[in-house]
Length: 124
Image (cartoon, rainbow, N blue to C red; front, top):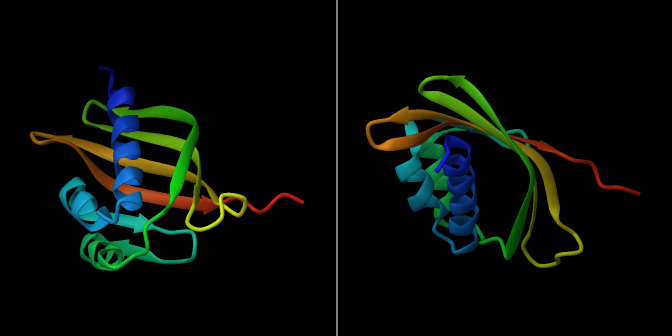
């Protein structure tokens, strides 16, 4: 499996966890100690705040990942960039954003250091 495949699998696993209401556990075990999430609605959360925010977060009903690209940053770091579409109640009114996740390779595997969302404006 290539690094790109591993990181894309991690991204999908994160979305699946968010759909199953297990995002706090997933990101608690995947984020680095100094990891950050920069979210579309103007928040930049550290690891603890990310985990706390996901404990009672409503689950997503579904998601799609498209146009994924892999950006190597060195031997032990890489980013994945993609377009995401996710919805809770109405698949015809999804949240759409460009996503980027920067990972560090550790002895335990890839760990998320920085996640960033840029919303895509509604068409029409």
